[in-house]
Image (tube, rainbow, N blue to C red; front, top):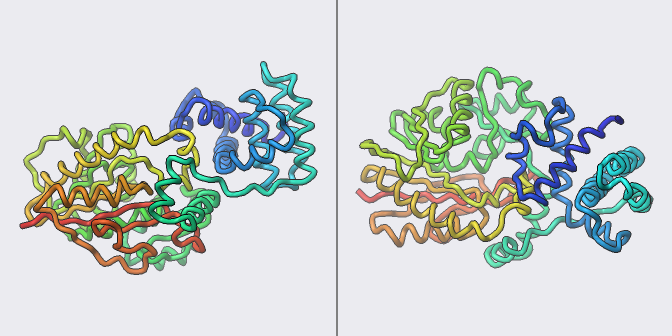
Length: 423
């Protein structure tokens, strides 16, 4: 077996799971009997990297193939071709190995073996003039409302950010030590205090990981907790807390934190992260809508379940798995969670509502509806200096987009709304 063949085979199977079976990459990666079973660490990482890189380029790869293919090949053959075209566009100098492995994958497949000659011929033609793949457009159900809200130029910028992929952002446990950690890690110190590094490093091998001096968290995802601005000793509820980045921010600020999440498995990650960083919080596994408590909180951070369309730069499988059909249920759930959060607040208490969604339905419109629904709910705009977004969204929310800070590597898309309960 040639170097890289096992990783490429696993990447092809991952592509088929996403595009054919509608499975999220996160679920595939966690499947003990899935495509990555039996691979060592480097091959697992390579397979994941190949699959995500191809998902960012599937439609442009199909256009490149269309000039050489009269009718759509069988799913397995098509997945191999897509992977190879994406690789040829990225690394044309490796054309020989890419084409050879693609042919081997098809030849060794039980049902696709006879197509190996076809694959060889197509890829040799493409390799002779390596393609330049255009930026992949968002699916229509998502692109149309974004163009309406942000304009075509902004949406093209968002799509370019999706193609570029994410950077590696870290949140220091002690904000005052951010500059020191930036120097030690060779990272860029971002406005707000996050640290940014190029992707591809082994996180667990970096200084400060074992000692819990920082954790991985996109710079945009770190903003909601900063907006909430908790004070030492305040009683704070982190609703929908997993995987725990915001919980750790709140605990590091000195708050007494209750971290609530419905998933016991995801809450284990919160527990592990708290242990590594030496921080503490009360962990509760329960559905936020059913959880009963007499406690009332000074502040609530609600990072609500959403379409996650703001995270496509790091999860390129989402456009192939999700569609507009899930949106109505998510919007209804978000509204119910906001109402529940307000019921758990003390008079005068603060609520930060956020979603990692680009859709106004889950952000701007959701906050405006909450303000209209609750006479005792007041906008509570907070100063967020140095950020590319502004408090100009409907209802006074902060909108962060993947095309913001493009020269620095972009951001996850987030909506952040700060509100206060009267009294």
